[in-house]
Length: 504
Ligand SMILES: Nc1ncnc2c1ncn2[C@@H]1O[C@H](COP(=O)(O)OP(=O)(O)OP(=O)(O)O)[C@@H](O)[C@H]1O
Ligand SMILES: [Mg+2]
Image (cartoon, rainbow, N blue to C red):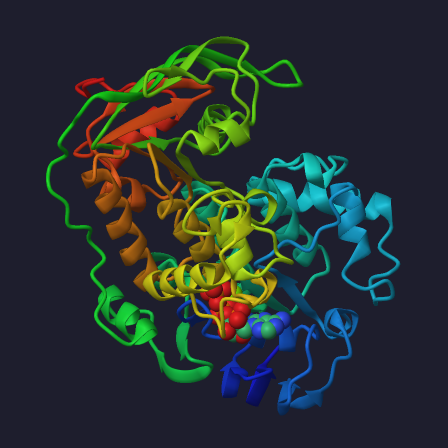
């Protein structure tokens, strides 16, 4: 199906999120939308999917103007959308979510549970996704939830498929598989709008790239355009994608794990005898295929999981049994994998979110009361420094674009008085310009003598930040290797194989 957007404009109060955007997506085309955080990509797609209504502009499908009063209409017209923020009902099963859709009455309202189960199985098999149709959404890790969103859109045989950062929570292998499926769908005639911040993916799969900045179309270019050029088109300046850093000055051991075992509620040894030392002045990256214990390792350190045996020490203090509040107060900065669940309160303002961890001391409070003027000043400094695109510090976090929400969490955690900084997927959903900045800040943190632990599924990120790379497989550390190790070797280690010639 051919899609035309003409003069699309959408305002939120004083913010012009989309400013006269025109775009054509040909049948069977993979059209990539690139743009920095807050550029207006999700807003445009939400207009197309009937979630918002445009202030001006027209949507045409195969040359005919359409108007949607909700996602149900959009789905009935053949549009499917995978949202940047999950729209799944947490207490329902996978199959129930597939049946539900976003609106109660749709053309596919008749999709019953048995059909949905079969669809889930069929599509999972095609993707190589391992999804149980009867699993309850809230029990699933974010990576799997993302896959459920994809399955849900595909189950309705969409003719136009909108993918808003579908790969942000996928592993590299899953991303490759998804791109394969996108290609296959496009060959069958499905038109795809693909939003991502990973320029490598754009180059691999897109037919056309449209760049949006400040709500306006800047240019449509070929995916052959060099990565550096795409990056500067997006952010309007040169971006340095390599991280400058000096050799680490290793200090004392600040964090140590000794034979730590964590057994989860299903009796799985999610952490299976991990011993690890992290020293002041280094960045240790923990790599692995999702579900092999990297996230659990961070959660265990933070006191979000109970240790069955073994010991964890922070700066010589036993924190094995400390709960999360005590660990944060002991000076551990933490960027969680799922910012929506653990990192932010969406209905609070930005400045309230900045205060969440440090609410008891300076610079936020004098004694027991909030120092309002200091809070405002400090919040504005952080917004400026971390380039959070927002009308003000009193904007609700839920009104920010995805990448800007991530910047709020990172800004808060990096600016606290720290003994250790731990981040899972610190640049998830963040545009290339801001990745550059966050990486620089992480290296500065390291150089100020604070050890850093990064959990990342992005090998590019691992290679640019790590002084040492610990690879996990099935709850164990397979080996700890220098960042000069090849991708292939790390890949093998992620599959549980310790290749010859690699120093552990
Ligand atoms: N519901 C809303 N209320 C108020 N402002 C909003 C709302 N939704 C989006 N905005 C604003 O519109 C602008 C565009 O946001 P949008 O989510 O479309 O950006 P994006 O390009 O998808 O960014 P990202 O890459 O971070 O996801 C931002 O300034 C955002 O704060
Ligand atoms: Mg977005």
